[in-house]
Image (cartoon, rainbow, N blue to C red; front, side):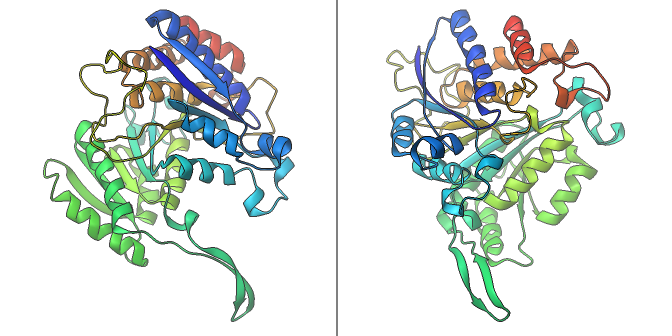
Length: 384
């Protein structure tokens, strides 16, 4: 198989961790007889420096012409004083919108080897947990009307949130389909006691739940969900929520796993009739055991990225954790191309490296030894 991958390395540690992910994918290509064509494009602060824009049209066009997209991170102190429309982070919203990526899948898994890295007590985490957060990605307050105006107390800023039935229904279906393929348990998080958008959210989700009687469905207010994640994370399997709530809860969930540097994400869009597949797959080899995980997702292009930021304070020091980016590559192989064989190979290699006790600085025990980003990458390559 030939896969054409757009690389958006971005800023800070982005180039380092994406280079690590590329090394791992290239090694799997040797193992399984595939080929990757990687092509880099500018995004974020690097794009601002080169073109004056955080998301050049060339980058959007390049992503649209690829089979999938692998993103590092954007932003940094250098660009903090720019206006909102010119900040590097604006590129993230722009590329998600341009590709129609309304679903963000964020797994939060506590690896047994990293139990000591979690801030939670042993009796809370037990034998670990494995949560999938399904976040709506292109609606809500991040994409609503915003600006400044004169109010009761003078100048005020405002941001508005709006959700349509269609937007809620499509993310809801992805969440229910995800639950069906896991442990048939779904919790929808909202703020229906205060927000009108959440009341509509809950109404639509209740309607969808009738179509999935095999799924154990529940509702939870976002403030309670934030508390329950640290009180008893094992009660959750799949969580579905809005853009802003998902942003906050997924970062909280990442921290209780030990480090935000461990967690990958997939941004997917388009509900359709056909399964995700590689458009170069003339012989149908991209499908493993029939169909990829989401048979009703028909988006041609998806985007994969670690959920951490650009960490400009450690950029160039070779101490970043590359695992989240490497696991993002594994998610790409599974969700975009149906290559569960490659995804499992990468995930198993990460498991083995952690079991052997190798740690980067962010997951090392206090005063414990740790290895560099490049060395962690090489260790994972060795275990493939």
